[in-house]
Length: 104
Image (tube, rainbow, N blue to C red):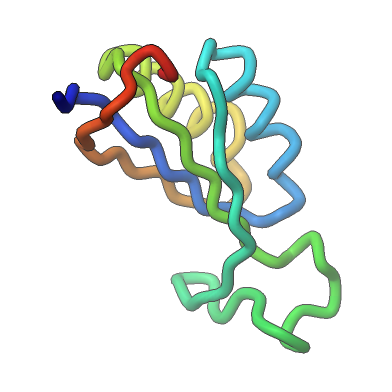
């Protein structure tokens, strides 16, 4: 049986990774996944092999899932307000279905 949940995806410069993870952990989320990334956005090209002089300016995608949608929105808003006032980054939420709700 599947259960509804909300996945929060954060894409930001790697230098923000520790601060993002700290807020996720403080939020009560049971875990997260990080993936190094590369791409192009308003601020130009990011990452990729040999494209970034300083690793901290590479991008990272961090995702976590919460059963409580209101709590997921609250965490996303907190991340946005605390970390993305002067730094670039995006946050988006997706409705997902999970199989083991006790894990979230």
